[in-house]
Length: 123
Image 1 (tube, rainbow, N blue to C red):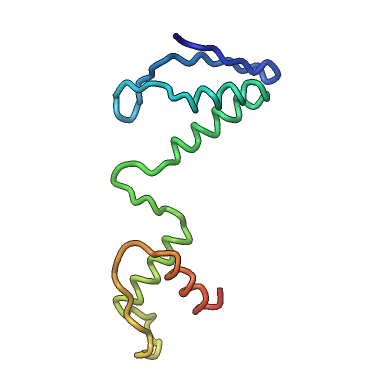
Image 2 (cartoon, rainbow, N blue to C red):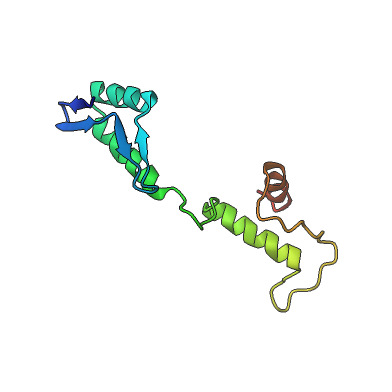
């Protein structure tokens, strides 16, 4: 049985069925109780359109298949720096520095390693 949620202040109305088809997978999914609860909350508080637009934005911005999940520009830059240090790449004309330790070449940076890098570079 579908239910209609109304935000009279912002003139927003949405009818939610019991099941929907996930457009990414094509599978039929049941609407979870927590989704219904959030819809009811935002309809009651006149923020339904903001909730729906926020959810759509987050859904469309979510990493897709084949893309790494760490698309944060800061983490991407830190990963690039880490790869450069691991390979020993330096700008041309820069003096060699044997005191730079080689870092493991994993694709992920853990929290402790990130804090150590920031502390080492004055962050």
